[in-house]
Length: 347
Image (cartoon, rainbow, N blue to C red; front, side, top):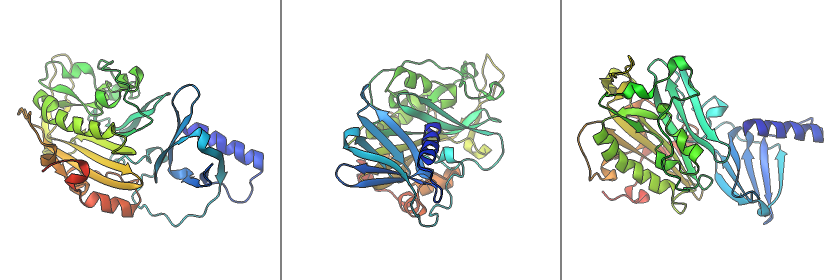
């Protein structure tokens, strides 16, 4: 999509002979006489949705996520617009990592990869940051919005190597063989039910951490289902931004390393698992985090509210800067606190 957008800009400049101010904004003029401006540097995705007639268009930008009927759009233009000085000091410098769910990329070490999986029909499936030295991910991040429908395709995949990670740095399905740990999804299968292709990508082994099955199928599953319910409820969100992971930075955040009967790999076993959630609805943001001890205890009647924390607290625990691509004033407000009632959670 970025390549397509660049091509459109070049075509526009060539056709109009634009010489003075370079267009920096995509302007949608709607038939109700209103306009929607989206800054090109913040544009995340323009996606056609629906049947072969492609009636809908979904625009996902740093300031808003909006779905339009093509019939409602009068014209689409590239324009130049004056903007106030940058209001985001901790934004990811890499333009490919500007989507709101992407945490600040790791600034320490030079052996990390940003991996993004997508499908032609439904756009980005999820992104992750991969630590090549540890052969483990630092986080998985993804979105729910109306352009990613729940078509209930079921579990269509089986665990496979991530083809986008160089062979020397991959982890493998066999690394878990008789290790005592399950392959714990981060972007879970039920969160990506639009197509078989999309669902199969959730079974790349890079999208997993070693988990005790009692945690994976118990407490973690409970929290996953809460987030899945929010994500698939269009009345609750316009866009839901999700980050999930286990802790792998520092020995204090590890239980140890796996041992497989088939390979010599030793994968880090997180001591804690967490989720960071940002919700956009009607132009308003709210955020909440979840933090769990990774134990082999069977917790079958967990209450999500008991594991809720603020994003600020989660950042202190993990050392990761979540939702850094939000304007700083919005980021500071939504990360400072949460209200359980806003999320439909009972204390």
